[in-house]
Length: 124
Image 1 (cartoon, helix red, strand yellow):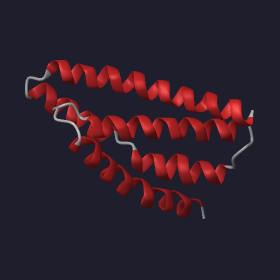
Image 2: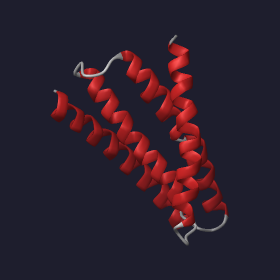
Image 3: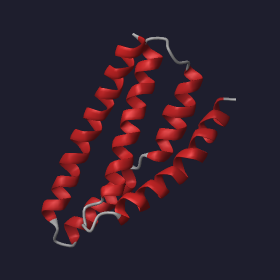
Image 4: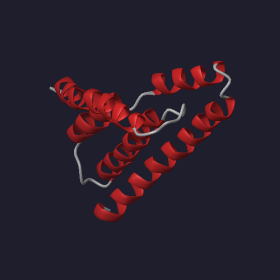
């Protein structure tokens, strides 16, 4: 049963990642990968909320599998982040490559901590 929850979350997360990435990137005339940055920060926020909700007993392990592992696992993408950073560096856009690494790590961690804090504030 657990694997079905992960699959169900991923079925929503993967197309959501693709559609969000394309929509966000189409609105920016920049080599910076705003679409990937956006899905990773949103996914980190959701994962922080879910982890916080589970830790205070407001959500079950099943919710964590569905949303945390399934949805967020398919929504966020470390491989695309890595590839886009490498591509920026190889194309000579080293400032953007560095900004992508520093910004993604800082924003992702900040989003996860914020989501967790919000969960504790709402349900803790």
